[in-house]
Image (tube, rainbow, N blue to C red):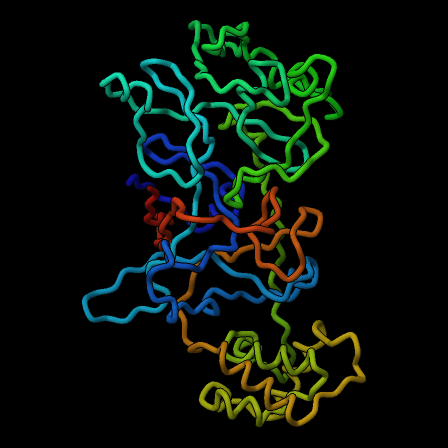
Length: 416
C-alpha cells in the first residue's frame, strides 16, 4: 500500500480522467473513468448513506454550453470517530495500474501485469530461480491523436508483425546512452533484436508516424482503440496512426477544461440568497422536474418542502426567482402540462433525492467535458481526452481526497 497527496483541483487538471499519476513509490497509475466514482472501494460496504447530491454543483452558463444538467465535484475522503455517523464516508477516487508492462532490473525480462494489480510485484523469472527482484514499469507507452492510450506493442515491434505467435520471454536492456536508440528489445526465440530509436517521430500533420509505418514491413500498424482508464485493455478499433512516447511526456494528456464567470441572476426584488437556495440541491431537483414537465412551480409547493429556508421571502419574490431560473431550462414543448398525479409523482421523486440544505463550503467543482471532447450530454465527467463511456471492472487503485486546507491546499491520499 503506497500513499501520496493529491489536490481536489488536480483531479480536473492536470490529473483528470485518462491522465497518468506517479505515486511516491514510483508506481504509475491512470485516473479511471467517473463511472465508479462516488462508490466505496471494493463494494462490500453499506452504500445506503452515500449522498451524491452533496457534491452536485449548479452553473447555468456552463450547463447550457456543455449541454448537461449539473456538475459534480470530486468526493473528499472522510474518517469518522467511534460511534459517529458521517455521510459520504470513505469515498475514494479509482486509479488503475498503467503501463501494464514491467521489466526486472536483475534479469531485464519483460512481464505483463493486470490493470488492477496492487503493490510491488516480484519478478516471476527471478523467483523461479530463488532470487529476489522487484518489477518496475516500463517508461514507454503508445497513443494516437483520437485520445487512445495503450501499452507499447513490445512483442509486435520486436517480431515486426501485427499478429506475432511467439510467447517466449522478452528483455529490455539499455546500453548506457541517453537516446532511444540505446534501448534494445530482445526475444529468447532468437529473432533479431531491435532498438526503440525514432518511435516518437511523426509527421507534422499527424497523418503518419514512424511506429505505425516501420513496425511491420509493407503494412500500417494502426491504433487499436484501447482506453485503459475504463478498466479494459481490449481493443475497440481505431484507424489513426500510433505514436510512441515516454509515459511522463507532457503531450500524453491534455485536459479539456471549460470555465465561466459566475454572475448571480438577481433583480431589485430578488436577493442573491434566495436564488442560491433555489439553485441548491434542497429545491433545485423539484423545480427542474416541474419545469421540464411543463408544470407551474407554485411557491406553496416549495414551502411545503423547505419551509424554514423560504420563510424570510414572500411568494412574489419566490415566483420572480423561479422565473429567472426557468428562463434557461424551459422544456422544448411548452404546451405540455403535467396532470395532478404526474405533479405529485414529481414531488415524490424530488423528495427522494433531496439532502440537508446546510453543507460546508468545498473546493472547485468538476467541469464537464465538452461535446468536442467525446463526452456524452447528461454525464458529469472530468474534462479529459478520453470519453467515460465504460467503467473499470474489478478492484482498483484509489486516491483518498480530503477538502483543501487553508494556506496549503493539500489533501491526503493513498493508492495501493
